[in-house]
Length: 251
Image 1 (tube, rainbow, N blue to C red):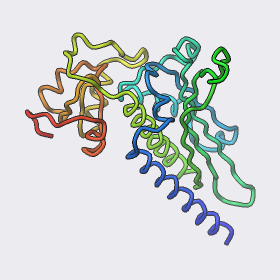
Image 2 (image 1 turned 120 degrees about the horizontal axis):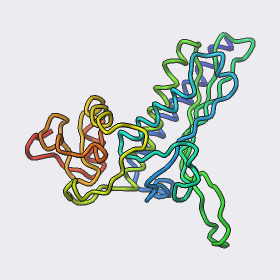
Image 3 (image 1 turned 180 degrees about the horizontal axis):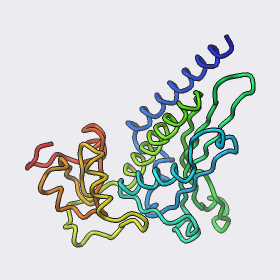
Image 4 (image 1 turned 60 degrees about the horizontal axis):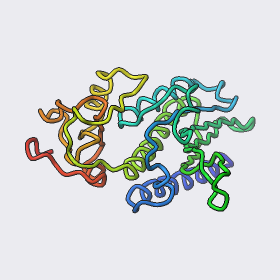
């Protein structure tokens, strides 16, 4: 009976979190979204609790997947050891806590994705501190096999929400030629992988410097430089980002 009560409680918590994610994606720019403005480069740090060793989850693999997801969205990621060189010391941090109660045949896990940067105090401008300006949390439970599948999937959802807020805070402007666009290519992913990854994963693509979106097969989409390529999962998402359909491919 205790397992059933825990499952019901977790279900309610997860549904509330999902509702929060949906509401956040459609809201106007709020302070935490605005805090992502001009965060042009950042590092990614993944920290896991010791109990993760009892599962099949791999810390480095989780980090690589999140970095790839961010890079495919056009966000520049620095190696972890260079975190102090990013303007504002911007860091996307991922915390994974796994706990297995001795009397239950299940794992409880808590996921947290949060953005940390150095900020100045309004009343004392010369005083600078590291502050969390954006965050999402997720609490659930499951068997060892379910964790292997669900944790990466839920982290992808949470990272997608960070990417959405990032693009809301850093809207694309104009339609300049890609030749003159600012170079934001990732230091860790080959350009060809960025293009093929976005084209394969998303239904719509665009240049981060353009107001127009295309189907991945569009001839205009194929002229977008890999470092400027951004992907979207739905038409609602791409329209919300302030883009209009291509008149050639009519996506």
